[in-house]
Length: 235
Image (cartoon, rainbow, N blue to C red; front, side):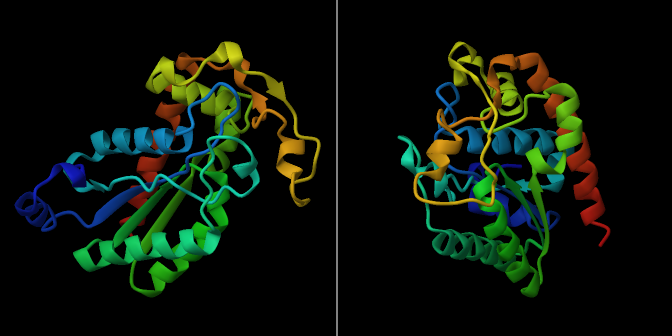
């Protein structure tokens, strides 16, 4: 059930039997020369859409938070970077409002790596307020399974590009994709470090992506995520 498609009377009726909200959280940022700037929103939205089909009237899908913390890639055109403190306070405020409305289970469907540490703090604050939170960072949570299908994992790599293609093949142009391995350690940061580590704002093997691989990945991810949501309900 999609929150923004309901009028107030429908929403009030739904809240009598729904206590779980799925909130896609992403970013608007560069994804190599070949993937849409909204990649980190489009993939969690698609995951939420498919989970909505699985659960039908048991979950509410909330509108996406489309901007995230993307300090490193802010040097590239098309990246909108939100300060981590501002971003954290905003997501916490949104989650607090869901609690006020009556949702007790909050599922954060994250699509962006730069959001991970901030969202960890958000869920702690929401838990203190009474929420039961579940955060999905699909590319890290299920990396082993993903690698069996799309071994060229990375930022705008084979996995992300394939998931985009499975949504709409106009969202990624594989002919523009490259292959890149990051040689710089992740714990090194300085101004310009991301442009040095990601010269084309990508990593992995985007050129090996396909819509077929993306569909396989969605099937794997949605099944596992659905099981984890059901487990959340038991706590």
